[in-house]
Length: 313
Ligand SMILES: O=C(O)CCC(=O)C(=O)O
Image (cartoon, helix red, strand yellow):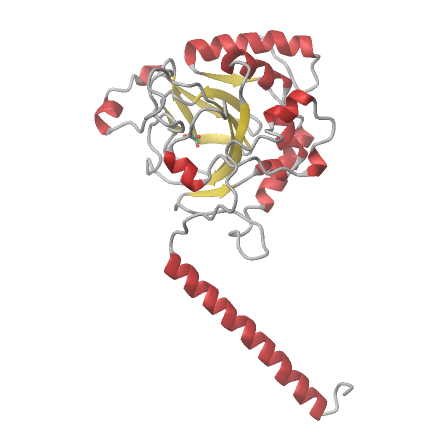
């Protein structure tokens, strides 16, 4: 396969894109050549890690944690220019035009840090995203771009080559037992490794995960395809959240890809059903008490200081 980087002329990217489309058609997953410079990668890593400092709450941005072994960072396009540049890389766009046809958009951009474990917590699956009760006669295509932000020596993305095009589902034990593991490809690689894959094929994060792994996953599909109910309720494919600072120099095609003006999946006043509601209320109340105590202590300290003549009245 020919190689291309972010700075290659469009013609070279077109040739490489055709190779990538062929690989996707045949195998369902393909490793891409390097997409960003070391400096851009470092910028992305620093921005991503700044979101991993703490759990998101109140006036502090951070990660989301809805499961034990992954810390989720939502809406990575807001974090650094590199996240937008990778999403709209000419090679990626060329490959997606060839594989998905004319109507695809970027529908999600998030990442996570996976924690070390020997547990197969995610399992083999094809991504379920569209409404399988409405679309029965074909499997609509969806492609993800995996992009590593840490060196991956274990816990890599794994894919069964040629398994794409099946109705996506979580593989039950009897199917896992018969998986053709001789066709399994494991995408080990340094930070900056990028892999495009058809999400209907069987894939998972491999185990054991011996070191923290940080990766982002961009999700591309046709937004006109009806979504499964669970994702509508969760508001999973909400219109992308963007950062105006990173949107200079977009073409009309880029704006379409980022969903400018597309309200198909916009839900006014959406409120996500919260889990752990009792616990959240308790934490909210405890925080309220802490603020009251802080205010009261401040008043008492002020009074004492005034009585002792330590501050002006
Ligand atoms: O984290 C991984 O390597 C697997 C990702 C995955 O299964 C998915 O995005 O559906």
